[in-house]
Figure 1 (tube, helix red, strand yellow):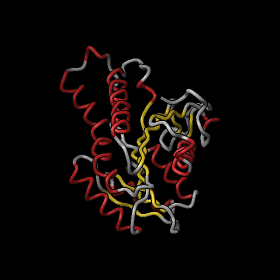
Figure 2 (cartoon, rainbow, N blue to C red):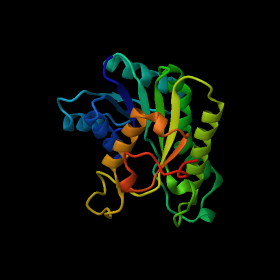
Figure 3 (cartoon, rainbow, N blue to C red):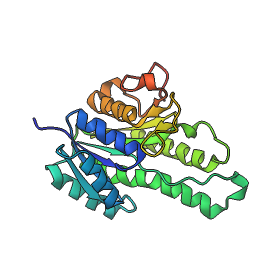
Figure 4 (cartoon, rainbow, N blue to C red):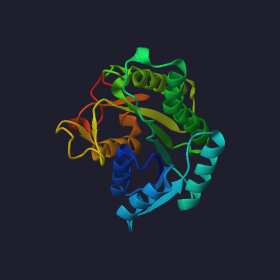
Length: 238
């Protein structure tokens, strides 16, 4: 049996970089995908000599997602798992200051890429495969000025719940909601000590991929650094 290959979309982002590093440490092949080819090249150079391939592309349409998939498959001869770690820039402002078009754009930018990914990739994954979407804990609480982001994260959770409820066979799917600030490449020097790190997010993702039976619910939560890589406490997921 060959090495497992994981396609990571949003690989050059703060969270994505940690998932890439953890997947490589775990012995997997990695296809790092994203919109910015230059950032992907920098990421690949950081992991020179390791089994990583970079694919520029996006999830703006089903056609684009299908093209990304074909390129990913060509890199190592197949894809066994997918991780979607994409999110749109957030605007911090009171909800009353937003207009309907901006709210719609926020929902579209944060939810539709996951929908397109699930619709495109799940039928193409092997029966033993898995798709994991990365979401945020703000689905359950609101930071000042960030109500639209909470609305988008709540919609994303219901997307994964709905997909899981309708799915009867084939590759599995999960949403991993990160209920913590994340210390990543862009903010590591100013991050607080209790923030989950990008590496810990990656370790948790690899734990889910490696033993999905220990993480059986469709919606999972990473709440603390101590939890990284371990099954959730009873009642922590929904």
